[in-house]
Image (cartoon, rainbow, N blue to C red):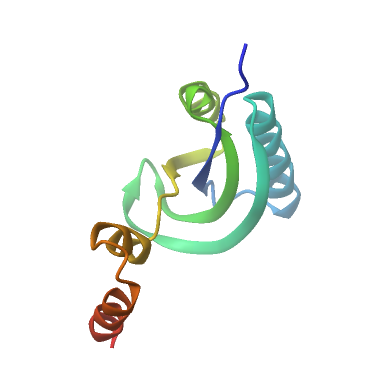
Length: 126
């Protein structure tokens, strides 16, 4: 059986704001274990801190945000989402596949003329 290709993903998790430092650390460990159990490899974990939600989710107006970058086979993402959905202290989460940056897409679609693509990118970003 061939080994599945690992794709890069970003997971954003909103956690119950009433959880303390120890509970947040335990949750990070649990999430890493879930990713590993589904054939993934965590490359980076970034706590983004407490933020006000743009709208209430249940009884919560604030949440602690956590970003986790990982690699996993695409076939395992559905199982990963189901496992994350069962964790009680997670208010919301979103898994997004990292894609090719827009700059690289332009270079490929324009026949490889990278100087013109870079000039256009600079004009747009300024």
